[in-house]
Length: 362
Image 1 (cartoon, helix red, strand yellow):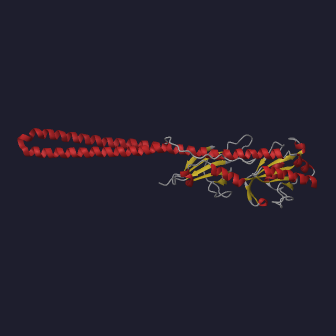
Image 2 (cartoon, rainbow, N blue to C red):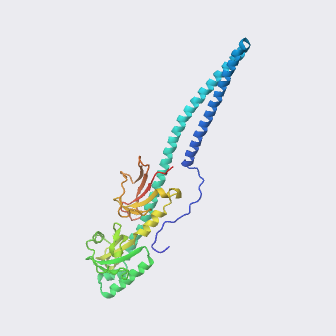
Image 3 (cartoon, one colour):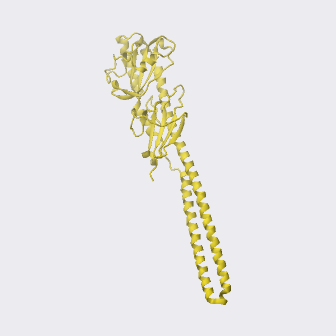
């Protein structure tokens, strides 16, 4: 794995023979069929007994006085047949009620277990990206103390700009998850970048009105950082970027005088896609399942089906909870969600991991 890259570990699924609630539901359905079949068999037998008793009564009547004793036996057999039939009907009714209740219980438990599993997957997705982006906050604060970056911000003459450009390029060659690194003066002008040949329009551009630059100018010390919203950056080929910034300070010291701003542009799309597409959804469920990362405003940042990225907003209601699931009563679609718990010093920006799973067609 290349330096600076964090990807989820993909594990090939193994056959699992552990009983599940789906198996329980299947066994319950089989039990219902067995009970119904056996009850019908009992009713068929009692029907035959009653018919035989009726025939015996007819024959006893024909025999007259000689058939009187046989007639009594036939009537008793008929009475027993009626009793067995009544017992069979009562058993059928009671079993039907109990089994229906059991089915509802199994369905409820199964749905709850499935929903909980989806919530866990949602948490898995957002935790993976949080850990990845935590590294970005470490990178930008570290590189902002690089002597070449500090010296260039302090006095951006041609020699120092060339050296800072070289240093930024070396960093980019080792950390392949970045599109570019920009060193900005305090007035917002880019004075050095890591890939001037690939992105020649960057140096000299002014970003004083960009929110990420304004927030970075407001940082109190070198321990602080800015994590900007994921967006498309025209100067970087229109690619999706997550921009992280830190202040460059005199001597590379935490409390040193502010000299400039270092902005690093994380290559968002391929990294986020690897996470949402790597979440372990059962193969049979993949076609009906979307794995998503969304921001605090429910804007889609990444989607396993690659649809709606940076344009779609989800409408699930999380209420006041950090995790849970909602089920559409009309369509059966389940939306499971988990708010970022953060990682180390990275707060996570209120992002969500979300799993949307449509009802299985039967």
